[in-house]
Length: 153
Image 1 (cartoon, rainbow, N blue to C red):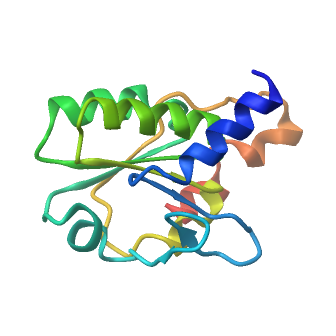
Image 2 (image 1 turned 90 degrees about the vertical axis):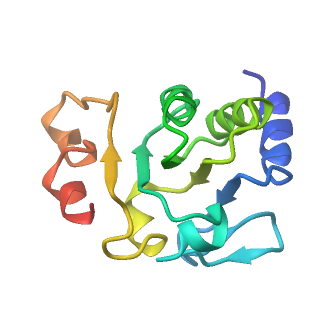
């Protein structure tokens, strides 16, 4: 993917109503666009989804294919896909908008920061569908199933 194409997708992410981004890893804050701060911690269901349903997170969701499929099959649940890659988030957000899914959102952030965006006991399920195995021992701390990450969840 060309850099220009990525930049266009990053820009379009700012206009999607179902995308929230953390632009700085030093100032942990979600934005719905560059200027609109949002704080849905402990209130995603009431303030964003506007309905009280089980909340499911998919970590490292990539293009959101799995999350979108599950949102279609289970309209009685709310889904949030989380990934650091903006072009991947764009794909999932765009597809879910085209499918008129109101029970799905996407958050672009580092997974280490998710405890800043979700309240204790707010999330009913967390999925890690296809984690990068990071086979080298020196990279094992990056595994989403390492003790470091499991303590966060």
